[in-house]
Every structure is written in C-alpha cells, then in structure tokens.
Length: 524
Ligand code: DHE
Image (tube, rainbow, N blue to C red; front, side):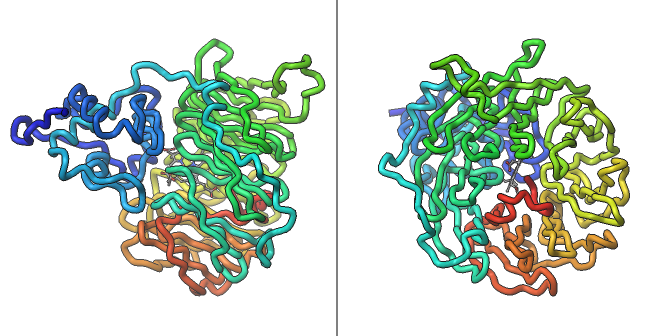
C-alpha cells in the first residue's frame, strides 16, 4: 500500500502545465526536456503511486499499454483537460477511470510530477520491438467491391478525437456508413491507398492502423514509433513512412502486411541526430520528403522499387538524398508538381523556397507571424497560381504568387487560424480562426477578389475549425470542435447550412477523391 499524503501537509503545486490549444500550438520544442509546471509534486512518491495504480494499463515503462504512453513528449501535446484533472476525474468515453476518491490532491500532483519527468533513457524501438506489437488479421482478404451502395470515391472520413473514433460518411447523403475505433490521439491526415480502398491512420503514440474502407473493417495495427508525428504513403501504395520524434527515426512499413521493412536512424551529415517533424509523400517524384526538427537538412527518400539492386537478403534500399539548407525548415508546402518545397524557418520568420530538382534554395518569402504552411492551399488567380497560408501568431492569411514568390495580399482575419480548404469547383476558400476570442467563426474568402465575403458563426462560443469539401465541391463540411460537437454541412455556393451531424470533437475530415487526386484545394 502506498502511503497517501494529506493535502494540508504540503503546499499545492504552484502551476500546472496547460493543455490548451494555444500551448499545444505555440510550444514546438521539447525533445527529452522535462516538462515544467508541477513544482510542488514529489516525483518519487508519484512513481510509487504510479506503479501501484497506473502501470497495469500504461505500463511500468510509461510507454503505454491499453492506455496511452505517459511521457512528456506525448503529454505535452495532449489536448483536453489538464493532467491532474484527468487523473482525478478520468476521461469521458474512454477506459480511463477517475482516481479522485482514492487519491488525495497531493497524491495526484505527485503522479503528475513523476509523469512530467523525462524517461531516464531513450528506449530501444527498432525492428524487433516494432514487430512484436503487430496485430494483424491473418484471415484478411481485401474486399473486392464495397459492402455499401454509395459512391466509394465520395466517402468522407471524420476523425472524432474525444472518444477516438472515425466516422465513415457517404459524401452524398451524409449518412454514416460505419464508425470505427482508432488508437488514442490520432493526429494529422489519414492516408489513403491510391485506389481509395484502404486508409491508414497514425496516433501520437506511434500506432498505425489499417482499415479497409470497402469492407468497412479493421485490418490490423502496429506501433511504428513511441512518439510519432504523421504518416505518408508511397505513390504506388506499397510503403508507409512514419515520422517519429521518439526515437529519432523514420519507420518504413510494408503497407500490405504492416510489417516493418526498415527503420532509418535520422542523423545529419555532421552526425547530429534529429527528430522528424513530418514526412510528406511526393507522388510525381516517387519519394518521401522529410522535415527535420534539429538539423538544417531536408531529406528525400526514394520509394521507387530498388529491391533488385539490393544484395539478396537485405532490406529494401530506400536511398536517401540529404539536401543541406541554410536554416532548419519546418512545416512544408509543395507546389502542385512537387518541384518546389516551401518550408518555414522559425529562426528567421521567413519561408524558404527549395527547388527539389536542383536542391538549391531559390527564394525567400516574407512571412512573419509563424505561417502554418502545412494547411496552405493553391488556386489560379489573375493568370498566375497563388498559395494561401494562415499565420499561427496573428490574425492574418498571406496570399503568395508562386512564380515571383511575392506576397500579393495579406487578408486580415478575426484571429490566428489553423486550417484552410477550398475545391477546384468552388469560388471560395474557407479559413478558421482557431485561437483567441473569435474561435467560433469561420471566414469564407472569395478566391478572385481575395476578400472575406462572409463570416459564419454557427455555434456561438464554440470552436469552429477545419473544412473539407465533397468530391464535387458542392458541399463544405465544418467541425464544431467540442466534446459534444458536430460536423456542419454547408451548401458551398449559397453558404447555407444543409445539415448538422452530431460528433464527438470532430477534428479533420477527409474526402477520398480529394485526397487521392491531390486536389488543389486540399492539404497534401
Ligand atoms: Fe497538427 C496535420 C504538425 C498541433 C490537428 N499537423 C498536421 C501535419 C503536421 C502537423 C506536420 C501534417 C501531417 C499530415 O497530415 O500528414 N500539429 C503539428 C504541430 O507541429 C503542432 C502545431 C504541435 C504538435 O503538437 O504537434 C500540431 N494539430 C495540432 C493540434 O493541436 C491539433 C489542432 C489537434 C490534434 O489532433 O492534435 C492538430 N494536425 C491536425 C489535423 C491535421 C494536422 C486535424 C490534418 C489536417 C488536414 O486537413 O490534412
């Protein structure tokens, strides 16, 4: 029995780590540094309590079991209530019970203090450990035809993060075809096989899940990393790449079997190890492109089948091209042909344009206020192609000419935004205001005049974010980003609400056709 310490024996912790969105967004460096904020807690006592009450589900290693990993890297990114509140009250709609009746406030802050400490050493997570987690249906054969009678190319997924599910929607009637459980804390866009039949999602804990959209059934899952960022799929659909912060690797999985094919340790030309901020698929180049958090390099990894050139018995080659750049570049955007990469340099508050063919940096774009390039979109404007990107630190959207790389317009918004979307068939671009007092509005921008033509406020006081279009661009789906939230379907032309689908904190929505065709109004 672990002794419980009376709350009056010790001062309450002075402050707690905030899990607010703003905190999540704007604090972007972490590595193995301790999380601060539980100064009053006693980690040693917290550890004993953890072993007694938490380790069964989260494991003594804190790397996660039936419950998620509890390490600073993942806790820091966790959305929702503060950690001590979760320990006290539990998490609604999950298996996490509340410990408020069993443990004192001080006990809880001691556990939080223990969890805020970095792991003593970076755990091994190579081919062997990854393979051991593989859970795959060996009787699985891909569905030959959809088990439903709607357009499979207009199927749209809605990720619901409050209770870790994905809703599979018919993009015509908006009926729910299925709702499947995902690993905890899915982040980033799911990736579809090139034919749109399969989808892969990744969680912040590094679990990759494969789901058959035609059969409406889960195929398997595997833990490709301990703290992952996102996932990409090769142009031929054969390989998945998982970007990891912990360990500092890129894991390549065989998409058919989910078996690990190769774990690439990410080390710069001078020997410095680096976290992988994100991995992007570059279909016309048959490659994966990596944004690296700790070194001024951009990596391109070929996915064209070089197996025949490899010595027999050795793993697939995946040759790496390391491009040295002047500053660390984070958060990428690509032109439609994947010839240019635009990366944000946090050091200089500028974005750099890298010619992926020559490997040379060819331009610098003036983009103060932390642009969120990953959610940029492009369209034709005045005879040229422009890209638009929201800024995370100010109420601003920059519109940039992609030939001259000059800013053609800064559109003032009601606060910093996070996501933008449009569709080739729509005259509007949609931009949310994720932060600040006006997070309940969604701006609709005319792509020709570059003016905001309407500001929607569908649920006053509630966060409204992230838009996705149906395949034909006639409808726009918007999230009410709340535990008991909804996806609102708008007529994308009249901007009138068509229907409201109740959902559990819906985050991103993803239309099969728009994603597999790399449509111009969607993030890649
Ligand atoms: Fe994301 C996409 C990075 C915080 C929800 N986010 C991405 C991608 C990257 C990224 C690199 C593109 C990956 C892809 O789709 O393959 N996100 C980051 C961060 O660096 C940041 C700011 C801090 C972090 O902790 O990682 C961050 N992101 C968040 C959140 O807090 C959000 C709002 C809630 C959450 O789920 O964690 C969030 N990110 C999303 C979503 C996408 C995304 C919904 C997919 C957007 C899309 O339309 O494709």
